[in-house]
Length: 114
Image 1 (tube, rainbow, N blue to C red):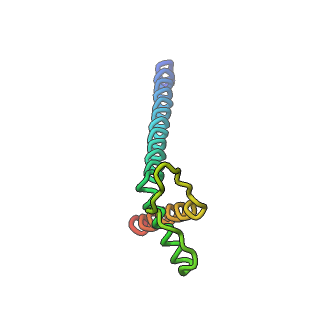
Image 2 (image 1 turned 180 degrees about the horizontal axis):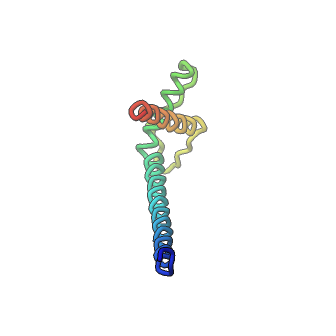
Image 3 (image 1 turned 90 degrees about the vertical axis):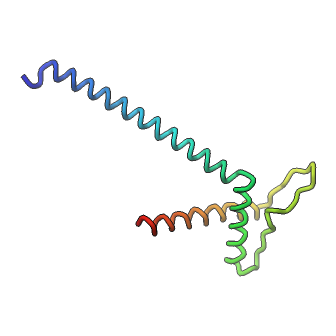
């Protein structure tokens, strides 16, 4: 009685439902990942977020080099009609700021949640 045509049909239906659930979960994970990347890049590359991370990077570079390397403030003014041209130091400060912030956030979460 067990294992007849009825059981095979039920098994096929359950297998199809499981595949559909896996596809759905994959789409949900892709949607969440895409939105997370979008929000993070929007935060980092927005005007105020970039200034925040640039400020962190400036201070970290100044402290780690004992004041030998100075990166100008990100609050400097650009003349009207001209295009801001970031130097290599600006990009380094931004990337160092992001790395330090992510590292400190990761360390905090590790301490909090083990």
